[in-house]
Length: 433
Image (cartoon, rainbow, N blue to C red; front, side):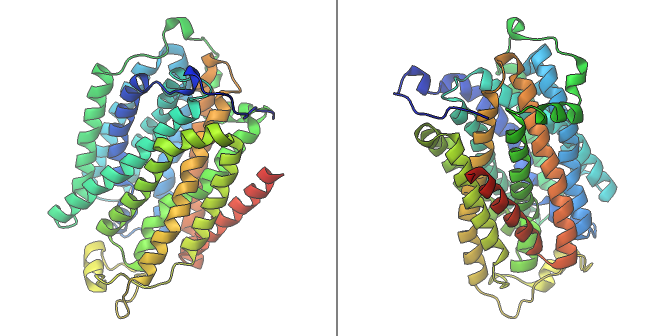
């Protein structure tokens, strides 16, 4: 693989056109707010229905599994029919999934809601394709980084909404789900009435229908020498970072005694760091050092953060009460809770320090890899290649909670984080060579 990352003098092509990008960014942000309201709470919501760590892992895998199936299909359809109609249709599915989540009365309905939302969540490839349509090669990493910045802002605003709604409702996990549904309805209206098409009839292709099937599309691209390594790298790094995101709430509960509100606050902290990286710093760093170096830096910092997380001291936060937490989640014994006789600040302070390098690494990797991917294909196939990238991303998010849930249940809270750290160290060695 030979991709030039040499720097060049600043020119008009170095400047991102924010007027073109902002409507896409705003729509994605509102769409993601619904998701980020739910993410910090879903493992704990499942625990209220007596779910074990392994079952919580299966629930976490349902969403990305459907996203894996849908992402290349939606990317292919957006190449064929335009970006906007595909985005609007998939957002309607997300709305239906959140409503079902709010009305859930057991694990079956929880799984069904995540399956519906996961299929609709494949629209992230369509949003990335809209960004790629609206940027140049030298601004594409920064543009795609804004998708990550939308995630970061979502992880600030969404958990704030979750924190406030849980506090006002007495830790009622249904209320954030209904709020997420309202935000999803707003994103549908914004997409339908504000967003402009970026992939007009003149740019559209008529590829074979077989290109839309996720496993086949991903395997075909993996066999390509120019993009296969990048897709494999996307899959492997997201296996680690996605597992970190999926199991951080459960880890925080078992190690520090953080409930839904506490985990929402932790995700706000992560979001602040990711916004700083993907909302501004990544564009400057990519032009100075190139995507290859950013990938190496991202792998190293993420590995450090995950290792430090695994070493977090088992000391519950000062306000933790085991009795109150058992009452809130149900004393099923499915998730081991910490003792409340020796509370303190050490565990929380350690975890907050560990989350800094973890968030930096996670913020750098995905947009840097996707930027390199878009340089390997003609503009007419950007939706397809980003769909394949989203599929690799989703495969990782399927495997990570399955492996994490099994390890968490069999070997303890730290075991999944050591696995993900080891994978990142191996990847870093390969990249360095």
